[in-house]
Amino acid sequence: MPYRFRPDKPLLKASVYYSLLFSIVAIPLGTVSAQTDSTGTAPTVKKKTWSINVTPLASTGDYGYNSDRQSFTSYGISVGALYRERFGLTIGYSNNNLKYRDTLQGATNNPSTGEPWKRSELHRLSVNGYQPTLKQDNYYVSARYILPQPLSKPGTLTLRLDLHAVNNDDNTEATDNVRAFSPRIGYLNAAKSRYYGLGYTRSNYGDSNNTTLEDTTLNVSQLTPTFGFAFNNYYEWVQFRLYYTRNSNSTRSLDRSTNLALEGKWTHYFPTGKSKYIPKNVQAGVLLGKRQWAVDPDTFSVYNLSDVQLGGLSLGAQWGLDKHTTFLLGAGYNQNQSLDFNGERYRYSSRYVYGGINVHW
Image (cartoon, rainbow, N blue to C red; front, side):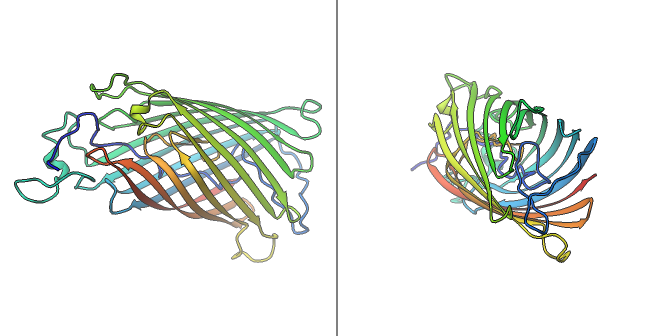
């Protein structure tokens, strides 16, 4: 097949599959935990006027050989405050740097050299220019209110609102200028053994500069029903979340208008006071189905890439360094689907590791 430049297929796209993840950070707002004391009983904690936690995180990873992307680095910080266990506020920021491969996936060979086309050669054919790296800034604010009893009796009813903003230097503008609005409601029973939640997210994307599209706008609606439960004397916590997304522009979404995926997380808590080398807890996660344009309410991540997540695995742990400090370490693997330079579908993998410190008082 002779080389053919596709004006309807941007050369470059942003990626936030590595937009990691405040996933096991001292119970982010709206995440449920069933942590126990050494007796295996859900502990009774004395209420404090203020609770503060600060979490810096860093991550790195790479992509499979058949991906246009090569590697990434990311760093960020999350700051949370809770007043009288009634009002909560978390703000966060992360910076991501993505490096692309020099050779485009799916591009046929340059007839002059017999070698695959390079990005530096293709920039003369593209209205978007040559972009070897991409830089992205992610911001979020999350506020919650725990209803007082008897309104939430016999359990705990929490109202939550998240706001997201994503800006990057993607020269196609297809993944830049993202804004997301996400109200949520959650209920934890009095025994802290069952959790029920429901969230809605509306994401608005900036207009693509691809003039061949009849409609350059993109809006995404997402529903995320969630269920969690404890067992084994509260030493185990299992959570399931369904992701249903519907977008307004299938042309910008790999010809997909709806997607459905199921995420499962299992957390095991270890008895306290055994050894400083034994983690406080370990968490394993799995993603099944197809997820696209998602917003993760546990990790505050906006997946602002049209690529479809086909599945993933993750594993993480927390170690208590002292009564105010926790060390975080984790890794993950994802399978994704995208379009190559010639518009053909292909799969690629991504791997990542992350670490961080959570300080709370």
